[in-house]
Length: 449
Ligand code: PHE
Image 1 (tube, helix red, strand yellow):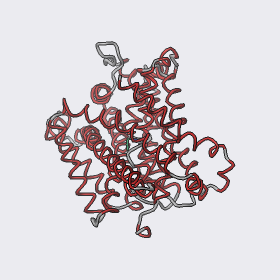
Image 2 (cartoon, protein in one colour; image 1 turned 180 degrees about the vertical axis):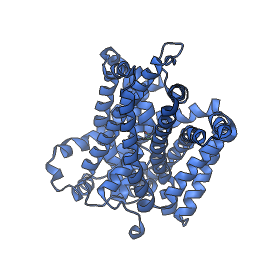
Image 3 (cartoon, helix red, strand yellow; image 1 turned 30 degrees about the vertical axis):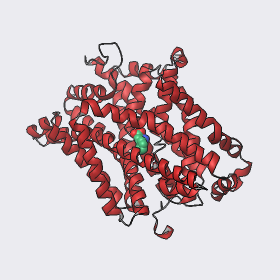
Image 4 (cartoon, protein in one colour; image 1 turned 90 degrees about the horizontal axis):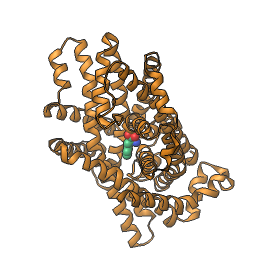
């Protein structure tokens, strides 16, 4: 079986795919607005520290499990277990992980669909199809179903093509494009009145907010979500890596790129909001908080673009292309988690598995869309606030307590000869064994209060 498994053709291929998974709506939308409303530079600092001290070790743990077992999360955790109890626990954690990945995809595809609609709207205007543009701007159920379905179908089509021709090929095409659009937009926005004000708000730290436990908690949640941890996506990408690649180095590169792009996205979003304010658009809610979430992306930005005439149309195409690309390279990694479990554990082939699971996920998206006010937030907090940290703990426990130390060392050594004498090997095993689970647990308990 292992001969038929997909594999990334190069380090760059893996880096693009894993960074593509990590960089998503969480970076470009979630991070900047959270930073702006939580002490600016202080949040940034907390986020960077947590990303490297907590999320990075957990990311390497997932990569190690995946590449060691060369299998999906369910099979991998099952084989790590040494008796019936730990094997059963492994399978349960694995199934729970891919269920969470699928549920994340079902609400992520709804939001990504909105991005697609906003991308299509200016295109329709350019073509003179005002009716279509108005429909795309509406909140009709039909429109939401169509764009969500289109996005899910694009995700499935890529995953059906497999690791090298699907995931790797599309991530290597889309990620450089994402970066270029991001830089282009930043350069443009910096020339507009009001941008400097936004930069100040983003970068000048308000350290008094660092004492707020809520801030640390949101920074941790953000770091876990942003590195796609706990749900088997990084684990399965790790399983497609060659034995000769160094996991600590690649993990560090992914963490750096992910945090770097989140930081860079802040250089776009905050200045853009203050440019909008300079145009007379409200960017604070009635309670005095900076608008975040859907209010920002789907009200402030379109309002700003419409004050900019011809340039506004192109800006809005570029901006929502950026969002759609970021979402797509993340959604394929979410779908790969359950698809790899099904193809490796049943006789179903990749194409059939991808379309079947995609259809099921779309059915769940439809149910959420029909009950937006009750189900949407519930799905988000069930997965990202409750499940992801707990699964993160479980995976650290598997690496720290169930995998044997020489298994770990051999796996790391394969791509990193001198690892035994490195600082990484002195710190990391202890970290995943104790520090990560305890800190995540403490933060989790705190969040339940
Ligand atoms: N990391 C992605 C983002 O920042 C979200 C994600 C979560 C992707 C879990 C895969 C798995 O948007």
